[in-house]
Length: 114
Length: 115
Picture (tube, rainbow over the protein chains, first blue to last red):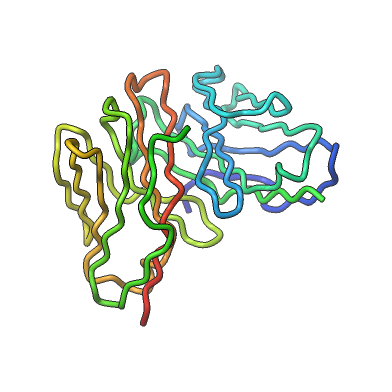
């Protein structure tokens, strides 16, 4: 158990809909990262927050947004969903300054768009 | 595009043998690399990291080698066990670190240990 909690674990929704994925970081971690992993693909960095503020942005679509709340949990909002958005979405957290061995990934949220 | 890539998408190794997973990168400014292991249905798990001021780093049954001349790194797993079956990713972080802590992952190599 990495200590990073993601909900829901599985989600099936229709095209055009909007979903929210939730992440609770490890206790004490201030940074939260979101990654997307499509079938047989690597992990694509979406966005990173540190202590409530956006810190780095990757290939995140405009239909997607995220935020980190004062209690440090984070939400990833996916709207106007398309079939191609079906993927495994990972949240990770770390205590900054960042070091590879202090970043921990959650178990992921499986999103299926039908 | 990605600057980190893997040579082989799949690798099968006999149990007890050593395995070597390779990774190439293209950005000479890259100076921090991490290997992750992802088991089926789980999130990536840190294995070992290496900075560019090192050529080699060893962990428990794992060794990472970094060749900056040819922009290549490898992960060696000694005496492989069934539990080593997973997808292995190399990832890099470009400086500056603070304020840009995004890992760039390669596409992964699926390692299968044959009993």
